[in-house]
Length: 177
Image (tube, rainbow, N blue to C red; front, side):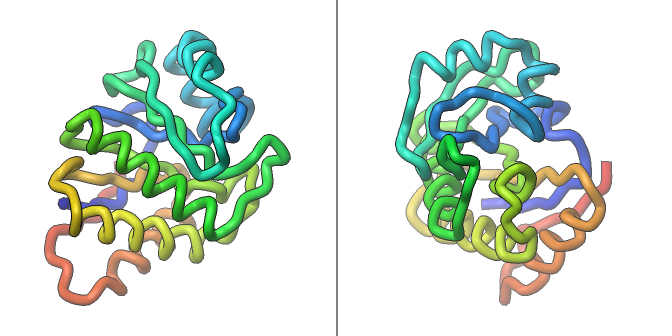
């Protein structure tokens, strides 16, 4: 699996799927979800809500509307109370990767789950999400590429540090778009 950290807008990614930092009822309010809905269209939210509610930590897939990606994977990193935890972020990351594998996708782009509305520390999120991606790569060939797309420089730098702490990993990249 090729891992990358990107400073940019997740809605502009050309990956097969983008991940929405969702709540378990799948309504799309602010933050990443609001941006995905605004740029991709309300049909993404309508389609997602028909699939919910789901358990916190689970993920479901919809089309991506007008986004460049083909799919939007809604990873419920929090409940309707908008609270999250290390366990939910790990579970949601794993569930989103399992969805990508089920769909046989080559690439998926993640935001920093739970760090916006959920208020989870970016340092812990980066460590958890990178570890979940690496763990997934040991058991599945899909997706072959995972990008962590961060919209602000401090969170980008936090994920770069998490990547740089991975011993022996050579298939990783950092970029500012």
